[in-house]
Image (tube, rainbow, N blue to C red):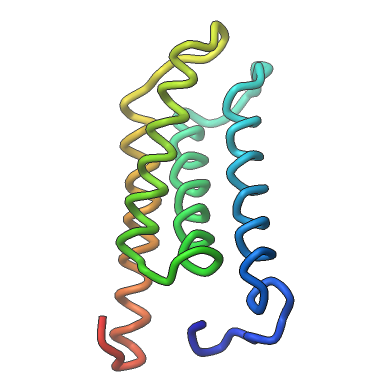
Length: 126
């Protein structure tokens, strides 16, 4: 694991625990993405910020819990977000949105940029 993380914690010490935590996270995203959503008064395009944040977190979690390869975490997170949008196309109360796919990608990409920035700050190889 990277500097600053306690490798002795259960989550980081045991691969099964890490992968299980990530699987639970992806299932939660799937469930939240397909259940009917009541009309909520929110600022315009707030859902795009939610997409950005969810897939930023998904990419970070994939990096720390599954594979310490930042580019792979971005590819997985973006692909998973695209898969969810395809599922939503077939759900009557949801819809497919290329803008959602774009913001999913931007959130995942932001995690890669953050990773590169922190590596730069610590003078490590990117």
